[in-house]
Length: 386
Ligand SMILES: Cc1cc2nc3c(=O)[nH]c(=O)nc-3n(C[C@H](O)[C@H](O)[C@H](O)COP(=O)(O)OP(=O)(O)OC[C@H]3O[C@@H](n4cnc5c(N)ncnc54)[C@H](O)[C@@H]3O)c2cc1C
Image (cartoon, rainbow, N blue to C red; front, side, top):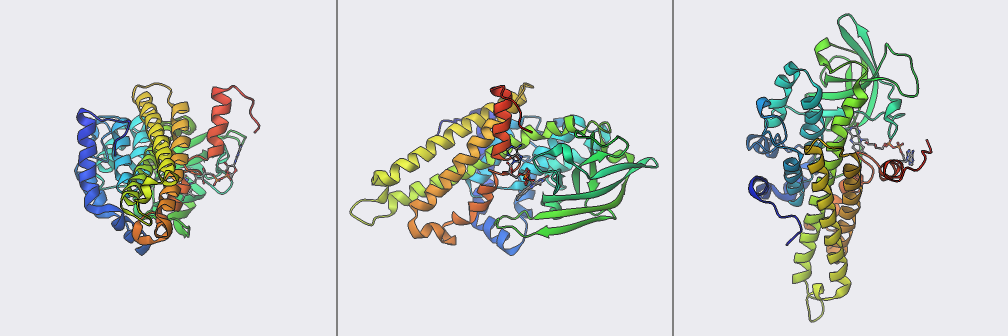
């Protein structure tokens, strides 16, 4: 299938290396693991050993020294083989980017090489029951406790917390007075620390990364677990939110390619009248339209990554890419299911089980409505309703 994005040089090599590994696993591996409640440890280890998880992390800390542009290629290519890995967006992309930008050299040395080679993973714990889209409302609180901190509160929908040795946790600074814009601090909290409890949240997603409520009951952590300065967390978290949005877009673009690729192949083969069903415009045009939308989303994603890597303001581009890619992926998947007729619903064809993980991308990591709020306020200078 030809597309608008043509990789050259290193990007082409990164795509080929990712594709070579991903092709040996494929969607059936992903779906089987997800249904059995298992993880994708072998695949993760291979990607880490090949240097693909840390392509964007600094070379002095074991990364590839490249940028988000390269990680976009890895994430998209995995999803294009039916392997949309939430953990790839979380551990190397959000957590790795925040640590690379704001952690002390000791914390970077301790974590970045291991995030890059895949031997350690980190979850990202921002969302709370009363602080979803409104991250300022976080009530999990870190209070000074001797030289360190005592953290209490709760997080929910924390992906892959059971697979991760630690979570990058956003907490309110207990020493500051409560207000509408609480100062936030970031900590690296071990998931096995006394006082941390994980409780699985059953969801409709068929995905090897499970979701958890995380309870924190006076969890004591040392001073070395704080990232950057206390109370400076909101600014620091932004180091990870644009990469998160760009990588979520890349994941969607990969799903879109996967779905359209399968649908086009099916439409070339399947005959119920005298011609393959792909000859009917009722099948061909919606697939062609889906391909156009996915290609446009890929361009938007590549542009957002390019701005981020160039040190420019990538917020609008990241939000736009994420919304476009999530919508394009869901439309592509829906059309691929439709193209397969009844088989579209059969697990054997590897489409229907991707529905909820794809649908998730309209809600998380940032909802459609919050993206549109951002665009309305920042691009169109419209007033804020909240
Ligand atoms: C499977 C899954 C995995 C997740 N993984 C993680 C994770 O690893 N780490 C983490 O921290 N979080 C995670 N999340 C949480 C996710 O980021 C949030 O669900 C998402 O940001 C939306 O927040 P919310 O669920 O509280 O919805 P709410 O904020 O309650 O919003 C509900 C609805 O109201 C709309 N809305 C809210 N405010 C406005 C407004 N001002 N204007 C217009 N519309 C508005 C929203 O767009 C949404 O449609 C995950 C969620 C899911 C479902």
